[in-house]
Length: 469
Image (cartoon, rainbow, N blue to C red; front, top):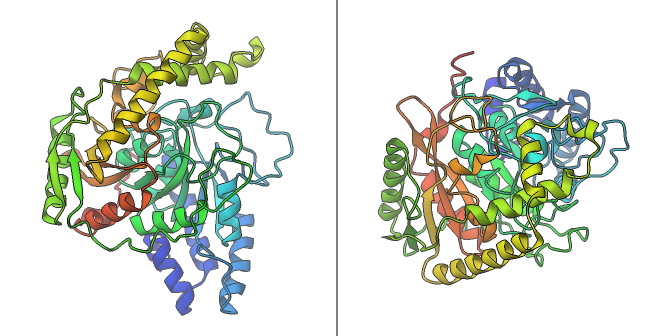
């Protein structure tokens, strides 16, 4: 039965608790056993706290036995990326420059909300240093690997969360996304991840990389992501940029279908070279949208590659965060990140202000484009997962991870909701992802379209082989 537990969705787990078929303690024990068995292969965790998790599970079990669960996620194993503050555990952000010996007595807003809803916190998942790149390795925890092929990267920067989910080591996980860091690893590992509209999920402390950075759910099913977003979108006064609270459950209307939705499909945004296998899998997924009754038009959104805009904003953020470190601390940084800090120091105030003005023009352009469409579909990534331990397929050490993530960071600049939904496998058995982008603030339609597509596909039940291990 423990093997069954690890592959259940959060929704199924909660149904089992409600019926009395099994308990949070049983599911938590199964999760911890799975981590003990498989994390030696994936290296997805920086902290696993079995004692704390089992204590939370026993408290949840007692509530369920009384018929009085305390919230929407009571007893569900949940994982927290090592960027997000979690009471009682160090948040090292993947960096040797962070002193672990300090008071860790505060939950970030999203963690606090999940705790209030009874989630069982299992541990913290790996991240590259300060979440700076699209793969997951760092000076603190080393290299995290993809469960579908252990020689490959799970993507990043939420690669620990994606690898853990894909490997059956938890039902719910937090990711952060400042340039694709939820969607990139979701695409590479065949899980679901949504970057909500900026401000939908309150954040604290706010990212030094600015208003491109989002907090969002990563799960194995769309319904679980809708559940998690319903909880984490609850208000928190510590984030002055957060959106006005909508008292809604994102599972309401999730199964209403997509018939009649107007959908733009851009296979390459007008300028991206896409691997033919990925392109074919995404095109096949788009046909499913048509079969489900959506009105699909192939059209590019009509903007030039915004990489220079994004890199200016991101590199400046890295310099702001780390540029004043003393030399002995700088020597501890990931060399690629240290290079980005140096490059960012060369930017002028005019460079930064110009990039932000150009960003505003891009955001306005996409607001106008999306007036004619409910959704925009693209590949999540132009390539399948590549070798673990390198920055890019060409092992560029100079911060050019943006070269192979051209579909994700534009929608951090525009702040729109965007999800990566698994859409099949390459001949080598590596996952591909379909990106579903929504109108600003319309997270619900992104989830609804994701759910409709998910129901038509069989590979959501596929399990990784851990080949190469």
